[in-house]
Length: 352
Ligand SMILES: *Cc1c(COP(=O)(O)O)cnc(C)c1O
Image (cartoon, rainbow, N blue to C red; front, side, top):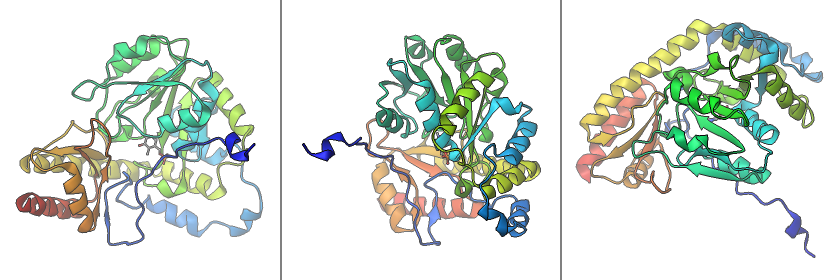
């Protein structure tokens, strides 16, 4: 017998590249191009380093208080984790145990199938329609759970709340997770529905709209019973997940609400301007409500554009996968970065 036969073998998620070269225009992982709220710098500088010898608050109390106030929810309706990836992984482990397949779209965040494989959860991918929208009837069949990102990634398309509510209401026997990583950029949050449906879990993150990918903060909001089960699983795994600095600085980020709104509005304005410029260059794309655009060119294959941009120090995301292998996911950067992108796209298109 070889020990390797008994290894839990998994094919890990492949994140976008994080180049060391600071001159790269990095439009490949949907980070915020602007710095975090200024209050965070002050908080970090005044942090009493001696405190680090102690374990952190298991409840991440300061951060939880700030989030509860901001979203008008109770502490028993909130779960905090190490980025929403941690929250989602914990939710898969906690809620998807029926043995029936979990449903999610065929074109979506490529971590969902990785968690399903890791935990040996059966799953079925439901194909988006030709315009990349979900077909809600697909989600009304017997299932072991549902996860849908809204807006979806990498398409950027948002679904109307009514369609999602219909899916949630049709599945009282399973937990429905709405992954709202991009909701602050123009989607409609399902948060108002958590009091109405005890099977709904809404998951958000500080990594995109709050410019704090490096701190690793994500959270879920839902019925107290759902949240209770999530906490039980988390505390059976590791009770000190949120480090002191994340709690302290994350709370400050939530309190800097005006800065957050300004940043998001700047990104939305840039996105809308760039949509126009991309159209003029012969690109088409679903109408994004996220901080990225999923664009295909009428003549030049996405792979060529991806490689050409890379040579010029501009990183975007490209997947060689069925249905999406002719599109580039371009994160919205600053106006200056996007002007450089457009200039280079023009040159590449003229040359090809
Ligand atoms: C970025 C992203 C996440 C994870 O973000 P964290 O950095 O782990 O909070 C989750 N879901 C989707 C759809 C994402 O794009």
